[in-house]
Image (cartoon, rainbow, N blue to C red; front, side, top):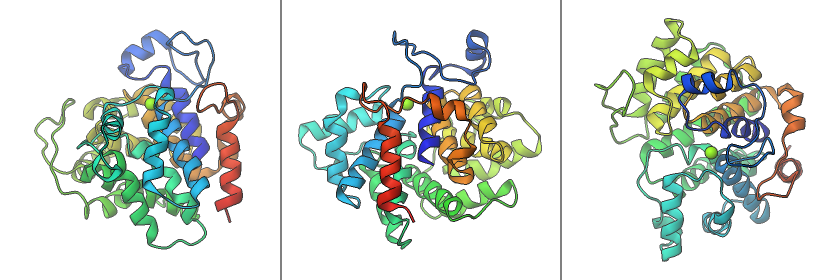
Length: 322
Ligand SMILES: [Mg+2]
């Protein structure tokens, strides 16, 4: 799960925020790490998705359990290292700097910045499996994003990953939708409107958009690219969540193809590939991820600390694993 997250992010980051059609014209189909776009020649470097997720993991390892204030402080202390920071996290860090307490520093935002970093919260709960996982996941989500759809999306994906890690497997493509909706529909309290794509008359909670439009695209046999262009695959949860679930519906059985589709066919491709990568990693295990991606991942978090991601995963397995 954690390795899949880091790999997806690293594959997507260098062509982040490009229209899929334009990306394809410039780069063809991306199936490997590319050199950085910002002048660095090295490949496979992480962005905020990997960094915030693994800094969370580092803090969980240090404390043994979730202490939200410590996670907030770690994000703030590492601010200068963050690559590709999102607007909401930037505002959150500004507020911390101004002296807001951690529990009041989250801006209102239905962006995907909490969902992209939430997966490690499962780790300290692996051995006990109690309902405290829900509380921790909600607290960790709300740390940076004060929004019900964000918290709901985090809890729904934590539930999906938890089940996959327990060996439960989707018996049907609709499993992804049903499982997501079964959690999110009880938690979402506000309505959203698309900011692009072809469903501009929709107004409702994210789970409803997902339930209505993702299976519809599936049964019309749309490609990932076509479907994601329909709802616009950006960083807004109304875009990210359907994109991730659609890729999983079509390609979860093939980890490489699932991640390649996320990297090539979506707009906010590093985050969408990170979430897809975490999911197919949880489902199939690290060995199922292509060797060239595992071997080629530098695993840096701060810069000039190769192998840190891999060491944290090993340490997490020792400290939290079965
Ligand atoms: Mg990113």
